[in-house]
Length: 311
Image (cartoon, rainbow, N blue to C red; front, side):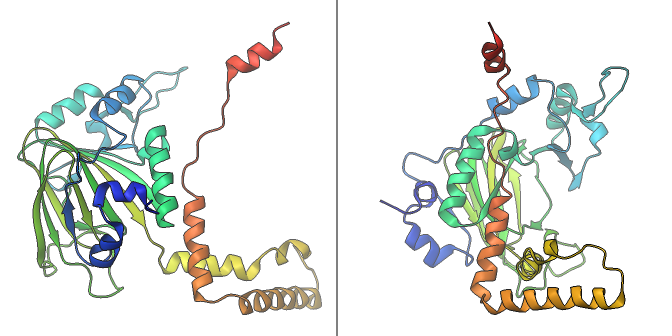
């Protein structure tokens, strides 16, 4: 049995995938029977119908720019307050009809089936994963040409979308986000169309852009997060300090006491750092990201509480 069954159902032979494509080149896959994701357009309809769905979990884009939230949200009157940012179905529909793209963020935080899928995939890869959802009308662009600080697996859910994928960064001196128009545009390395059941892999940092082609295009975007220098630095600090500080008086008063506290911290840091190598630090930083992934919420179960109190 494959050690990566979730990934394997989308890309086929995972040994070939990691040897030929992972962090090297983009590729579109058409799995036998088609790929499927846990989040469909009807799931968004149900989330919207609750009345609680709001910004920043939802964004809309048009003409390569993020639209102000007031264009697709509304305020409510709740106990004499007027909180805003609630998704407005009529405004969202009007913007979609006009060609805007709908972006749903962090689906794994609020959709249990997606959260379960991502935790399974993260367990296979040893890397944190997040989920986003894009809906783009036919003939219109989604986000501008941009780079993601993640390896991306696109699962096409409905309609079709044309993709232009450009080469990745030459070295580690790059940033995620929009590719500035005044910079030389990276060379195009793949043009393709994804249809329902297709999966597109885009390596970390490879610039890309998509256009809706036929029907209302919807795709689930799974972003596999790798660590960077900031994660490694944070891990180094936490490993070096450990719990040494908790055993020291928090506010030493005299010069000698302050120097003694500094000496104790340095001694503990040297001892801990002497026992780790670069691989340990990378593993620690990756695990920290995995630990930050959403978990199933605690079961409040008022019904069970009420039953337990019933005489």
